[in-house]
Structures are given as structure tokens and as C-alpha cells.
Image 1 (spheres, rainbow, N blue to C red):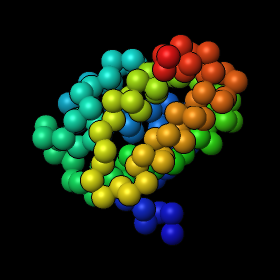
Image 2: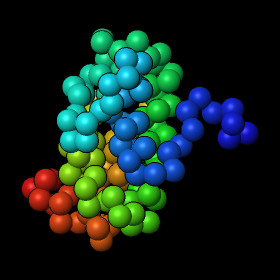
Image 3: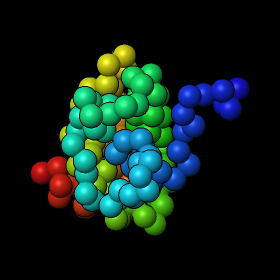
Image 4: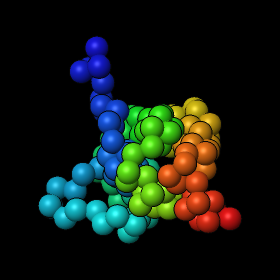
Length: 126
């Protein structure tokens, strides 16, 4: 039944980061790593044409998989730790996502605990 989900969970940390940034751009302009858009766009704010159910599914899938992906220790973790922390802290509460604070806290904690991202995450969060 995984094929019936509105949004498939990411398999890579970079994909989870990009899911937090927002929906894929239709104009072909790719998001630049570290250049975070406004928090309202990432959480489906006024400028977003993404339906609220899709926003909720996208953010929930990303937040719930970041801890496992970070603790697996991918090589890109060192580069993604600071942008991920920045985006997680700027992310607004998503309407309808009851566990938002717990999921966000779990993702931030996993970045602080993981070997490859501990220094960058702590430096950004402090």
C-alpha cells in the first residue's frame, strides 16, 4: 500500500531536505543548497499553490524519515547538517500535523547525535 501514499518517503537525506524546502518548482529552477526559501513557502503559505493535504504529507514524510537517514551516517550529512538545522528551525507549524513539534525535535536531535553532523549542527544551534 506504499504506492497509494500521497507522498513517498525520501530515501536520501538530500531528498528529505528538498521536501522541507517545498514542492518541486515547475519553472525548472532548482533550489540551491543553503538558500532557504521563506518559511511560509516551505509550509504551504500564501504564495504556495500546493494543497494543504499535500503540504502536510510532504512535511510529515520528511520529518519522520530524517532521524533514520541522519543516523545512518551518509557522506552528505556533513554538508547538509547546517542547512537542515536552519530549515527545521524556520519551518512553521503545519495545520493538521498533530505531531509537528515532536517530529521536528526528533529530526534536530538526530542531527545533534549523528557522528557526521554533530559539530555543524551544534555550531548552528548554539
